[in-house]
Length: 234
Image 1 (tube, helix red, strand yellow):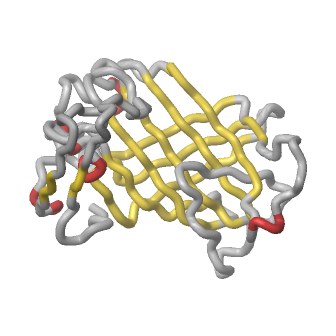
Image 2: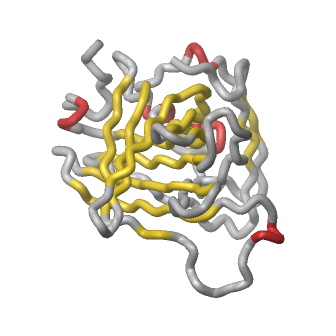
Image 3: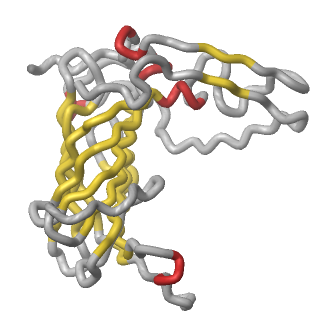
């Protein structure tokens, strides 16, 4: 299992504005659905070359460009049926000055995307993942994701039982906590939403990315039959 992004503690300090209105972005499915989101940056250069900087919450890149970012997001039903599929590639520019002064979109939208996830035993945490990006011509590129660091999203308020995003805590509320990340129950509701820094490769290019996942409820492809049971394989 990869080490935690914050090795000792993941802290939480949250405040709410007087307006108290929710601004949370619900990017996960309901209890009877699974959501796998994956984000990675790949450098379209030889593996020994310098990696690009991590793109924030996306990865894309047209094959004709030297550097690119690739992005895919998936929402599945309980049987693994596709509810949402999205994939794209877009250029990764070295500097702001390299960004073309044009209103024309630079991203390439995929026809579809496919994901395969392996889990750590007795958890819902991905041990590795593969993503197929399939373009409009039917050509497939497979990206392998290998986790190297883990971050618990409850440290930002996601699924936190007391300091959840959008919770109204009065005119002003400030709080904090710390926890030993290696002692967490990874099947507790507040701990199943995770992002992992990953090494990403498509066989020719290497880069760094992020794999975000939230799996709640039964999910046949992984053998999950309850709301928070873990993976039963080796």
